[in-house]
Image (tube, rainbow, N blue to C red; front, side, top):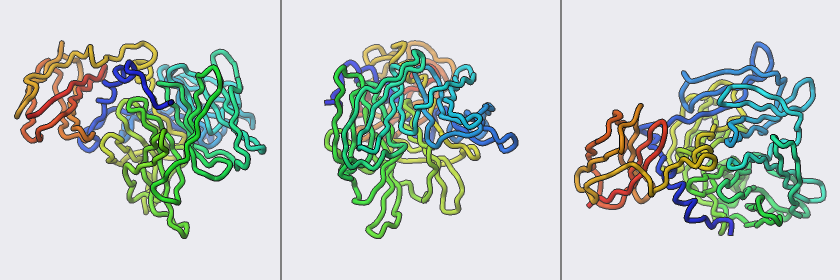
Amino acid sequence: MFQEKSRTMKMKLLFLLAAALCMNTGRAQINLIGAAVNQESGKIDLVKWQALEPGSIEVFPTALDGYLLTTSAFNAYNSHYYLNGIIDQSNTLLGFDSQTNTLSYNAFSAFSNISEIDMSTGLIYTLTSDTEGFIYVEEFNIEAGTDTIIGAIAEPGLMGLVVDAIGFNSNDGVLYYVGPDGNSNYCLFAIAVRSEVFSFEKTILNLPSPFGNITSVQYDNVSNTIFAMNATFDEMGNYTGNYIVDIDGLSGEVSNRGLLAGFPYYLAGSSSYDQNTGNMMVVAFDTAFIQQMIVFSTRTNSFVTGFVPDNVSEIVCDNARFAQNTYITGTAKTAADQSLSIYPNPAHNAFWLSLDSAEDGPLHLSIIDAGGRCVHNEHLNGQQHYNIDVSELQPGFYLVNMVSQQKTLSSKLIIK
């Protein structure tokens, strides 16, 4: 029932689905935030940068002496990065406004390593467990200062919860958690946190390999898909590889999207997801133990690797612009009011692409085939009309995406 989406939300998010760029030939700006130990002061610095761009680093010193592992989260509703930190041996919740670059400290200490945020409301949800086998679902509102247990799930025999295995569907208000239940079955828990009456669904997962460990759970609010990373092992317990997977919330089927070949080690607390481009990021170490960032496109099922700041963990993706356009201001263009025209359509060897007005700044054009693969990719010069050569494309149905710094536009294309 939680997988059913309204027609209105589908139309509202259609233009964002088209924002998937071809990572092998072009790269969109992906804003990241993380934490690192300052080697001189011993305190914790916050680091802002754009994925794979070494020249984009900004560093902001904090008063933290340390932080608790995998407790970072980004509240796209108010542009705040949160980290459960330590000052003078006391817990504090660090808040960092990524728009103004200002720091704040809050006494709230219930923020755990199993927390997620509804980007459409700004509410924080945390899972905890006890020795009796109960999973408690807690809702926290930082602005109002309220902290409420909204429900509990009984799982007798539960041995604890898995960290970094939680994602949030902001379209429907569903909190997803992946981990063993009380009978050691690997399950997906779908918790409807906005319902007046607390409810949840539990689905046993069907893993591609009988020996796997799922972490880095992310929810794509454009395609309404659960993504994760699955470490696989053979019968002897030997590591065999790490895969990006998607999880079907209804059937529990877990499907491999791509093998992260060449990277046997991964940094905990380093996974993040960019809602605008559909890229999942994680920090990994190759066989020579050289640290790199993996940027995996869930649209093309391929990845590129490159720069990541030294010693940075607790990495999140700044999805504030996505939340602002999609849930807060309602300025996102729908399929009905796009200002992108294509003619002739159907096209043969070429077509004209026309905008209502010339765009300031660079434009990026990508064409996606019916299988979700990027088959054409180029940068444009900010004019109003363009002639696009598609003589290399096969007849069929395509989606044309035009991405600027301010917006993303999409239109259907048929090639005959």
